[in-house]
Picture 1 (cartoon, rainbow, N blue to C red):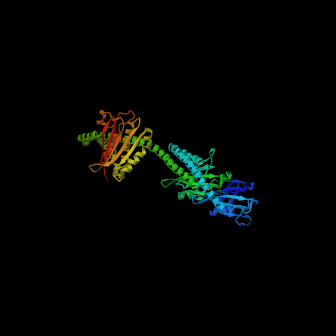
Picture 2: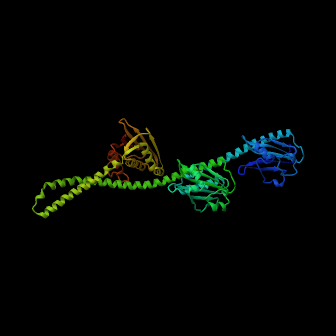
Picture 3: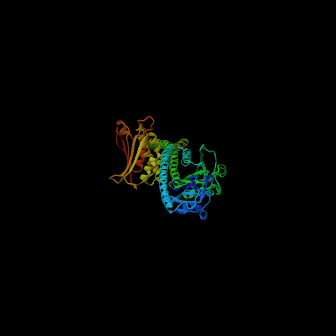
Length: 526
């Protein structure tokens, strides 16, 4: 106004939510201009913003582009405000005098608009960088928080709470997907006061939510009241919700659920907002998967305990059967050598027949127990040794974390195949790993390395940094019931060695001292 002697001036900016020009700042305009929104292309200002060209009118009463906001105005000129290659608004000056501006004034206004655009661009960039820094810091904290959450419900509550804060929304909801029954169940709904008690179940096909779930892509709508939505119908009307952004939560192409954000105004979620929600959804997917995995680890650990007890019972039964069979064979031989079948007493002959029958029965029972261990042959398949080691390390992940032990698994050959009973080989590995953890009560390091030795056999080294095996026990470590721990059974190494031997392999102690222990497993290659 000072430069051009104008009676009024204003800066209008494009409102992305309404696609209209909003007067952000003005001086000298009438009271009717407060909060006024001008459609794109309407009026001189709207034309300049739409086409990105400056415009001058010496007599607005003769200009068809002119839109009257103040009847006192006689002259007007405007220049576009830009951000990169995009027009985002207009700088406008008015005068109550006819022909108040000339072409030189218009050129000067264009220069001022360019300078204003540059300054505004820098300010927006600084604001965006600050906002992104805050969002990234929040994401890091959220990631740490969710990584330490062991229950799925806790993870989902964290996701909805942080999404609400990150985007300043009215409501945040997480729908968990049940793939078996193909429906979405509302698992967490929050507003600024906290959790909202609300129940909602729906089929993906009945809502726009299904489009996001099926296509693994973000979907937004700017006017929920005009769409045929079938979720939150009463809540949408009650809270006067207008716009929604739906983001799929996916882990390795498997849909876990949907994160939905709602605002009480018509709003277009920009690229930055969609990216930050996508990042939060990806973090949430990993956290949900980890929580599920922890649950499986706990149940697997319990199953392992039961399996170990059953295996131990079977081993004891086999050892007892083996010990019984030898004296039983002697008894049978001696009994047959007595030649008691020719006794004249019929009742005695019957007793002798029953005794022989029961001796045979006892031998059959002992034989069945001993043959039971051989039935595992039918469970053997070709497996990747890398897969076996990976699964074994996954099973003890929680135990390692609790024991503060770091695990490293190194594979010399990624496609090394062995013909084994996967469960038994994993059991042998788990016995060695659990023994190693027992030798490292204050934490340490565990290393598993696989390779092919000079005899063309698969070789696995299990090394720990524990206290080592007492020297006087090293020669007998594979004997049953030998243990130096009060909570040990003394059967872990015995069972492990027997498993490896049954696979035409072996288990050996390579070394053990105050720096740690190394065991070596060998298996024939498929």
